[in-house]
Amino acid sequence: KGAPIAILLAHREQEGVQLVTGLSRDLVERGLNASDWIKAVAKVVQGGGGGRPDLAQAGGKKPERLEDALARGVEVIKDGLGSGG
Image (tube, rainbow, N blue to C red; front, top):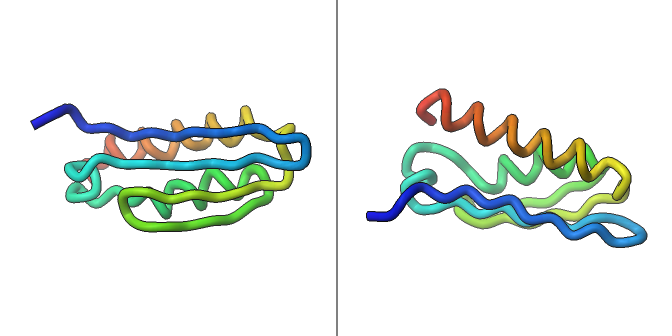
């Protein structure tokens, strides 16, 4: 069995950002959800999205807030991992 994997990818465009989150099966089984994660990140860039528990995507309208969104993504996943959930 491999190590747990949580991925947050972002692409900045002139008019917005595209975001993708992915979680390994073991993290999903622990209760983490990529769709919830992407929604929290996308909110920072005035966007929205969703998907499955293991893979989600979103877009946002504020590329200048991307750094803040990525920082929020790290906070959210750390909180999820720290709570055992």
